[in-house]
Length: 489
View (cartoon, rainbow, N blue to C red):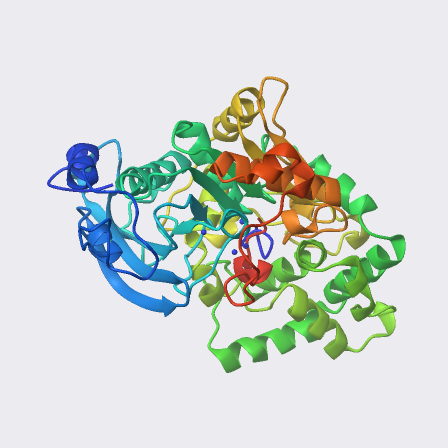
């Protein structure tokens, strides 16, 4: 969703034709034993290493293996059809990472909704269940992009079908329970996967996943910004944002110098002025998305008396002046394309700015090159929302109380089963199970363990005893919510 919008701004097999994929993958792996112990070559006496088993999947190739204590970690490419409805139309290579623990453990399918990191990391559900983790790069994020790119094939069904084929290919090796997870656009991705392929996963853990059901109805966001945090903090933020527009001329001069020094250009937005205003308009949203109420003392208390440099520094630290340059936007073209064709995007009023805004909250079309055609499909999110309300089974949604994206959220209805929506008090876009109040934390952890099929006997007897099965690892488990930098999502 920009910085917010971007960090929406964040985690099958092909022989001849894709139609043969499922059968080919199954034939290649179905007869192989399940258990491969971590870091060993032995496979129940067969001597087959886990890497060899993975690479025996048609269409799978190794980019590199990186060592990590207690795991095997692989960066892979997988051949996918550009169009799952017409596999003969060509293929592309989709990047995948695999954090292998043991085939006797459950597997977590992580989707970030953007690029995939090629360094070992572990999502919270993976730590909770002490399992394996498959992470998938979202289609059309480079290098997982067809060349040339047919942008009409970038939609949520095609992406869910990518995920389904990866699951189908690997399920024969990782035979225990599977959970889908992801945060922000990744949480949306996990939801869409469940909507289109509800029989694949045994549970879904979606973090801070926005649900823009009606793209033109955004009053929930306006109500959020009227009440979030404290009046003192809101006044500070509003004052800095307003002052940045009042001082447009001297600050745009600084922006022009900054762009020249860094080689930044503005062809996509059309002008430095539009890019400058887009950054400023993101300021309040980005603060609440990434910061905490306790951080408000870093915001100038009296914006009118602050220097130009102090206003610049505050806007840059929170919104990022590189975000709407051509160079900052290029990586996120797939996100803006989807926001403007299916996902939707917020449009907030920000009345404290008066008439200082020239362009308003600019739509996704502004941030996508004009050579790429876009047409919004209003029925897509309505379909997903209706499905979640009526069919959500074993789905957990976690939101942050002070995260703007939680203003429009998924809400499983009365016909859903074993599904939950929980909120982290004071939480931002990095909200997770660990941050929930004690009762919700235990309830969420118990559900995740149960869905994964690894709830200890003590937890089955008393869910309040639920806790992660793996110890915290400061390298594997570090969290960076700014990884989605521009997704106002």
